[in-house]
Image (cartoon, rainbow, N blue to C red; front, side, top):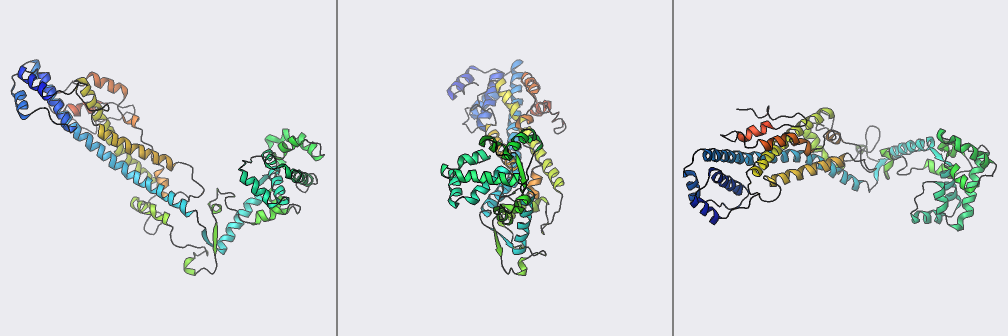
Length: 466
């Protein structure tokens, strides 16, 4: 870019006489300076001198070209600012809804720290449901050995192993975590489980993919000829059901485990993610028709409710109103309008940037014209995309099920700025023809209409010729 002229330099040029190109360029530069908040270097007298200077031929053509550019830049500044403002407001609409989802999840995190209040009937149903899952589940013999060890070892042993923070994923990891002083108890636990299996009291099976490896090891293990190393490999391939363990009188620790509720066991089921406080003599006004505790609404539920009401996802009785699919389509349509404004802003900026380079104008910074709005728009889009990405992250165990609002918002796509810019080929053509049609009032409109996009979008229908 050219360096900005000083007033003294301009005065000398005016006294000497300017070509149409020089005169027009000074006026356009002054317009750009004014937009960027810089003091004008042209006085009213300077402007009068330029406008009254005699010109003819090429000078008239060049001067008129710059006057067309001035009108285009003036409209471009207003159009760019307006398109940016509208796009930012439209993105903020989505961002606030996404922000409400984020706030709800944060509040749910703090709500999860306390117990969930339930009635006795409710709690018994939860315990029974988890108990059924425990009985159906298949446990490796390695895990059975680990639990047998804890059952016969002093209570402090488990605390010591837990305190060591060892990541136990196999029986080999477990045996390595047991200190030498309790090695005999560990061996005892392994022998007891082996005897139960060989006697038929604890029949175990292996998965089909492990059958070939397990069968020769199992034959040796039954006769007590299997090495300790291979034993640890084998027991992690053999499985028994919770029902078998529950029915085995020699393993009483499993009755307590199966019958007692444990938080986070099978926590893919939301009911098993919480600590519970059981109410005695609960007033009927706090009960549902099923004798479940209903209580007041949680604070987290109110955070997204107003947005769901506004979008028509629920009515004032919290019943489903519009379908999630239809609201999702409405949101996508609204986002399409925001994308049109983004396209328009990027188109105007590209045209003005190419023009400033073509006539060698002085622009503050390295981001071209409309740098401020460009930064604001980029920040809004980046925040929207971040929140949308967080919305799609795997839910934590303490979070409630997806709200209708979340399901609708998940239908929104991310905003890809690069896909909203004119195609590289179109920009290349723009650079070669930027001053073409620079006359009259329509230079900017003509250039915007001429841009082409990789996704076949066109401004030709949105911006009619007249």
